[in-house]
Length: 253
Image 1 (tube, rainbow, N blue to C red):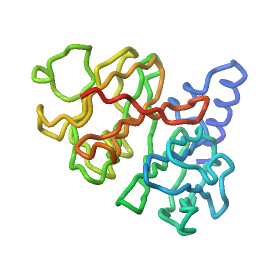
Image 2: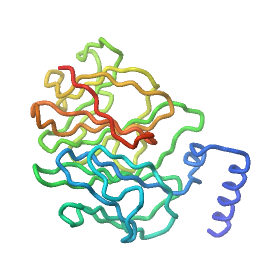
Image 3: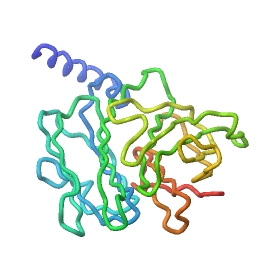
Image 4: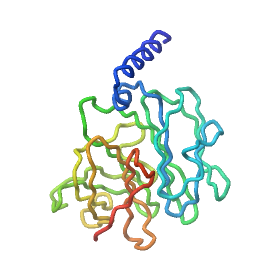
């Protein structure tokens, strides 16, 4: 074990000296574990992410549509994470995990009722193909008033009846692919994005357009639409967004 660790550290140092980027470190499982907070609860109070009972600077008292950057944490066993609802001054999530090299952890705050929020945690192994520049996509079910949903990503004008969902049957407080599995991949571009009730081509909950480049990492989160309850709002979390703000797509029924 000691020899393996020394070899990993030596490899990391050599790659760093050669100017190798962070994506390669992630793919080789040599990068430090990384965590972030994503606030996707429209009715939720600000929250703070704690690690071993200490608030993290980039994740303190953050509100709706805030996404922190990933930040490295030391690899260790029995790391305790918690999310505190600042308004109610109470924990809404707590868990102990083993942080693993190369993995990325997202704590996604979701609305669980008209007045409460909870947290869905994602452990992303980030096993990205070293030669791929495709964008990674994961869907998180964020609308507690809806059942499972299908998500379609297609070229503009595609008849929904002629295609299968890109990611199907994502339930509330879960993700697809699930935590522990790698994200789906897709080429960068402009796509027609539609969300439907799972298994239905006609019960459309959202229809709009999304554009993204290659080599990005996306979380797509349908959340409660309080203005039009029969529809959902579609949030797009892009890793490393410079303004740390989650974007919202325009619904075009």
